[in-house]
Every structure is written in structure tokens, then in C-alpha cells.
Length: 301
Image 1 (spheres, rainbow, N blue to C red):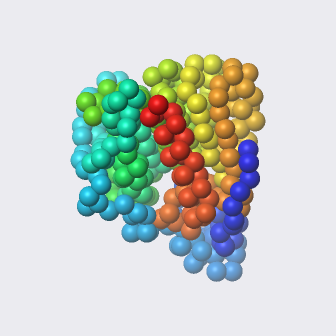
Image 2: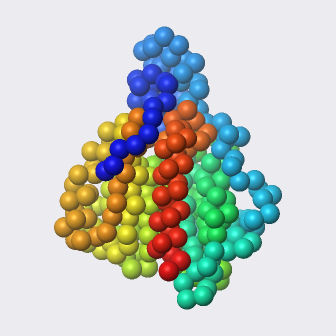
């Protein structure tokens, strides 16, 4: 992996606590109490970590380059048999394969449902010429509830295998959509990064490109089924995820699966999310430019 980028000024111990909180290791009250105890100004630092989604909007809902809508579709074998997603199409799509339009990219949320940050990522992709779709894994339990604490609780209540099935069905729906060229890419963040790797193995040749951000590795026994190229983004300070990379890398190399990984120096898990202080602008922008070029190369040819 190739190091880049710069740090964010919050006590590293607060970042570690926040990562544990985000992944279900404690509730909000315990996170704030522990943060208060371990650092001077820890409470203020901890409170600053919570997302402020007004900061996450980079492409407006009313941007004239895009058209957005919510769609529902069947999801057999999933948590409820039906899914809902945010579908955004470019008004002037980039060229697709063999003269067709709308190469498609699915965007997969973190472990809290389809929040405004992930919807904005879908709009960014559509503004760049892709048919983008961001499914809401929480649809079977009422959808993203409007805040991340409840979102995490709802996602934790779902059957994990059925939730994976819901994402697999979503990818198939997008690939076969009337607006899609049939060339499918997938990106995702945190839990969604892991699902990107999962889908690469499950979809095989039906997936053309995967760009996971700080996601869990695909299961070792599934790696041989991957047929698409992978562009993997990692934060430097993310021991839980980074510990999985050496074995994943060896498995990819053993099967001659084309891949490129980058680690962004001084960053924390979640550095692409511009709604929290974990965001590092230079790293986020560099990784995103790489992701767009990667999808253009693999989906528009």
C-alpha cells in the first residue's frame, strides 16, 4: 500500500473510542463518559465526532446535472422480501460500453443505514456520469431513522446473512436496470467496504470493478471467485481493518486477481466521510479522484 496525507487534530484515544462506539462496542452515553475521563477536553472532542450532515452535501438535491428518485424492488431471501434505494441518474450520462450509456455504480452505506452522506456520494457519482444507486439496508425495519445511533441499533437487529442477500439483490437489480449499461461497479464505506469485497466474490464476472473503503476482507475461501479489478483504500490508523490486509493481499496475488491498494497516512477509519472530524480533505479528494478514474477505466470501455 502507498502512504499519503495528513492528520486530524483530535486526541488519538478519542478516535479509538469512537471507532469502538461506531462498531457497537459501547453506547453513546458510555462513549461520552469514557472520553471525558481519558483526555482534557475529551467531552468536547467526543461531541465533535458526531456527524453533522449539513457539511456532507457537496452536490445539491436540485443540481441540474442529475435526476434522483427512490425506488423499491423485490429482494427474495432478504430481511423482508423487498428493498428500497436512492437511484440517481445523470442528465448527460458518460459514455458506456459499445455506445450504450449509464455505466452503473452501487454505493453501500456504513453500519447505520442510508444516511445523507451516502446519498451525497451517490449524487457525486451521477454528476460524474454514472447511474448511481445507494440501497438502504434498513428498509425492512422502516428505513434510516434520521440519526446514526438508532441506525446502528436497527442494523444490528437485522439478520446479517439476509442483509448480505439484500445487497446482492440490489446489485443485480442495478446491473439489470433499464437505465444501466450492464457494466457494474461497487463502492462502499466501513461495513459497505466489506460488502463491496463480499459482492466481488459473490457476483464473479457480473461485477466489473470494486472500490472498497476501509472494508473487511472477503472470506479466504471466496477470493478465488473474484473476477473484477479491486481498488482498495485504507486509513493508516485502522488496526482492526488493516490487520486483515496481508492475508487478503496474499490470497488476491495467489489467484492473480488484479488489485491496487493505497493507505492514506495520518488518517483514521472513516476519513472520506466529510460530516465528521475524521474527514481529511486531501486524502478524501485523492482517494475519490482515484475511484472515479478507476470506474471510468473499468466501466466505460
